[in-house]
Amino acid sequence: MAKNKFKIGLFKNENYNHYMKRYRKVLLIGLAIGLLTCKDDKKKSVSAKSSDTAKPNIVIIYADDLGYGELGAYGATELKTPNLDKLANGGLRFTSGYASSATCTPSRYALLTGTYPWRNKNARILSGSAPLIIDTTQMTIPKMLKGAGYTTGIVGKWHLGLGSGNVDWNQTISPGPNEVGFDESYIMAATQDRVPTVYIENGKVVDLDSNDPISVDYKKNFSGELTGKNNPELLKMKWHHGHNNSIVNGIPRIGFMKGGEAAKWVDEDMADTFLNKAQDYVKFHKNESFFLYYALQQPHVPRTPHPRFVGSSGMGPRGDVIVEADWCVGEFIKTLESEGLLENTLIIFTSDNGPVLNDGYFDDAVEKLGNHKPAGSLRGGKYSLFEAGTRVPFFTYWKGHIDSGVSDALVSQLDLLTSLAELVNSNTKGPDSENLLNAFLGDSQKGRDEMVLEATSRTALRKGDWVMIPPNTGAALNKLVNIELGNKKEYQLYNLKEDIGQEKNLAKSNLDKLEEMKAIYMKIKGEEYSSIEGLELK
Ligand code: NG6
Ligand code: CA
Image (cartoon, rainbow, N blue to C red; front, side):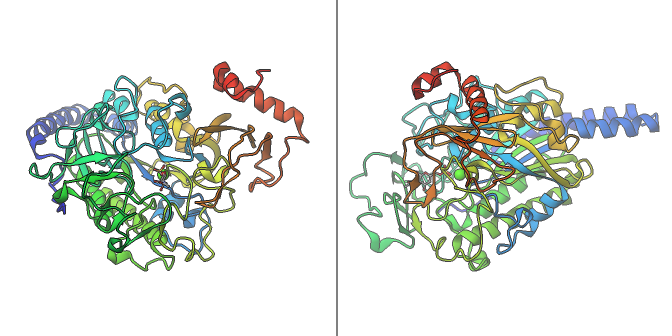
């Protein structure tokens, strides 16, 4: 098993000289600025303030499958999330903050590129061996920030593909995060339930033993290797649907993997591993302007809390890993605080899609839920076009710069690219990303007018208080996960202000609104789309 060797403040020791050079340069520039500005006290305070606000550190903390109603600050009463609540309540909490999609890969794609995921046919849930779906020439948040002088890093879940097909896991894996704007990366390739179950640091599998090379295949097993399907007696967690291929640490996964024994992660240590890497990153880069994308793996399946969190929620592993994630965020904030960075760091917390209970393993998520409502009062969940698929916890926190409060502005993760560009005085704009910096900082309540929402390749339109869902012939309910998908053979139209639970379909009673929504939807999606769907462009 991979030991977690935390290399103080560095993802990679070889980079040490490079960083020391950079560090010295930053110190010298800092010294020069200091000498110039201290001549005039008044000038000094102004320039200190403006340099703070122009180039704050930026941290995006991204949960995986955390629902709208999961945090105390969003109304949860059964689950305790004190650390996240403190940030959400001390910062600006959005009530209409959206992921771009109800699943992971498309949301992450949109977050980083400011592009609607439905514009890229490859932006759908990826296997662990899928190629990178961000074009290396495409603009991304880390690329934009690098252009503005930032150092950039990712720790945690990637799930945007690696390489360009047929990855050799035993060589440097490229292209990946380091080729789309991240100076440093410490990631898992896809999801915790997909092989390869190893960490990858700057393109190299951590602790790989060259005598035990890794092979990965998503179609067929390797001869002689055990599977969840054939060897249930070896499992410590049982699969419910899917998840019956290779067994790693007693947990059956999606996909087949051979070799790499010494490199395999310990699931229960994953939260600590990513936390420590995130803390190290901050400590090492504290004298630079940094961007960290800290992509938590919780509460996605398999839910494997560290033993010290087992039983902490009374809701079984799903609740326990949310408590664990909350603790991780608290510890991470303590690091920012002890390094004196809290006043100079903009923190954005949100989730990649809505909640799901049974997502393929028997882990008591349904049985021990009690009165907890992962989606709050929203309808649907992960995979759904109803609100709970994409409306997620979303808040900004910046001590001393963002006043605490609640904002009903309509904001999407899509908007972070252009808004953060505005913050750092870059004129970059993402294709579908709006400049909502004032909304994110609490200087305005004005968000987007409208946006297209996506769930497993189906789309809907939110505009103002209204949501329009075009006809869909797919199943109404995903029986395996027990989630209503939002599919209906006819149009659906809901007024969220009056009907947050999307119970009253007004498509037939408010034809004017329906036509207005259809026209805007088709204008955004384009003619090509309307012909595919057989919808008339009117
Ligand atoms: C689904 C998996 C689910 C989860 C999801 C991706 C099955 C039956 N279900 O295909 O368990 O892994 O993909 O989740 O395999 S996401 O949050 O990364 O999009
Ligand atoms: Ca997810």
